[in-house]
Length: 310
Image 1 (cartoon, rainbow, N blue to C red):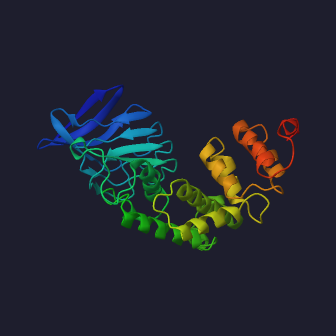
Image 2: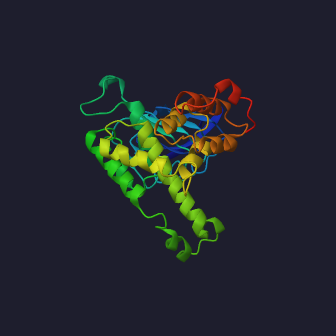
Image 3: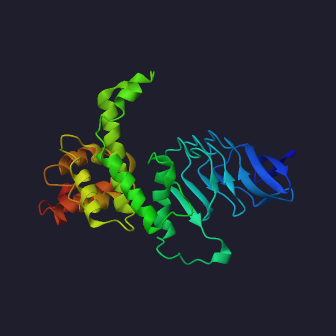
């Protein structure tokens, strides 16, 4: 077995080569956008080794080659700024939790190889719709069986995704708290019951937002349950986690705040409070809500409302 280093675009890959196959051990240097090559030193890149890119905080986007056959355990774990991964749409051997702790991962885009053409297979959803759901399966769903690249987007996979989502959505908000306490967590936040419950509801709101935003194959009865969850946790309710998630995480994404308003989460009773919460942040969302008040809620003059001090 031969070990070596290979430099490209300011990054040095460490690798092992055996019988014409190359395994990536890690990298030296930092990169925001990383493209793993198809071949190194005359050998095909077939493996990303265990913890190869563990805690690489610079990474935001990764492209993995068609030659890849295996991704090791925790290969991209705790890459806290990682947002997008692109890899071939085929069966890969996956180790344990390859993206554990990479909480910002929003898309795992599956790329068809050229010889297979661009057309989706029978019963297969569009790649752009699958990508956010597959990323959630990797980091949010707590079910390793859902992270199946070959099945992703099939009708059966979508049904399994929805079934797991409903388990998480319907789980009591206090579920799991005692485990945190009994395992001796030293982090105060993990043993603060009220904060634990708030974070649990936020996680549920994120799933509801995500599935409604990427709704391929979504049954009507599940859609209604997700809509109900968001409207029951909007501004002015006993708990406001759906509004908090929108404000903290989606304030610059029109698709989400328009979805939120379209569900009836923005009302005559809570809108002024929302505008105060927004303050000087997210001017486009604020302007949209002001227009929504005039056009949909039927009161107030839009231009005069701009002068109100929120």
